[in-house]
Image (tube, rainbow, N blue to C red; front, side):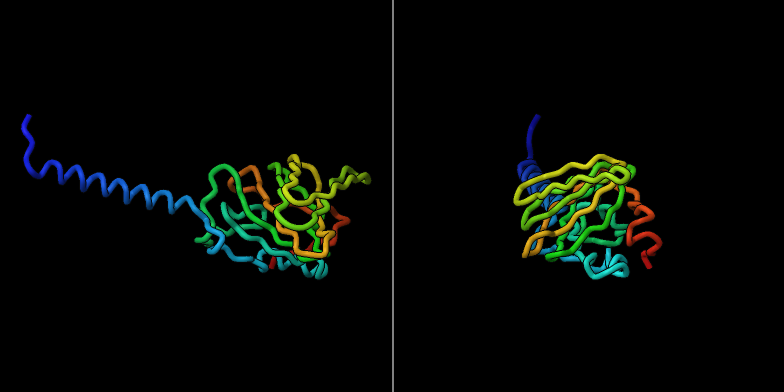
Length: 180
């Protein structure tokens, strides 16, 4: 089979196109720190129960358990799990809540985080610091609090692309508070 002079150019053009496609593909897989923003509004409804519940979510993959952020073009689409950072100022809390459908993991990047789990009237707490992790099974009530003097920054992963919104127990300051 004979080749024409155009054949090597077509192969080169195809190779360049494939390279451009691959570059575009990897760019679509990245969520860079410089393009993330702290979203102080997504959980702002919780401050109706007190200023200690003020915290920010920084989304990377999906919306986590904070609600519907389908229009958030910064976050990568979630397929099997969500991945975000949470920023808690000193003394800030994440109220007691339960994710009934997914396990949740916290991985501390900065600061000190006290995580408490509950079973009826019983509770147990654990202090987590730099590079410590806790994995909480679905259906386990939990809360968290920044017990340090600096911001606590940690990874939050939930084991579904669209986790259900968490529920709050009747004794929680969040009971009856709406998102609007």
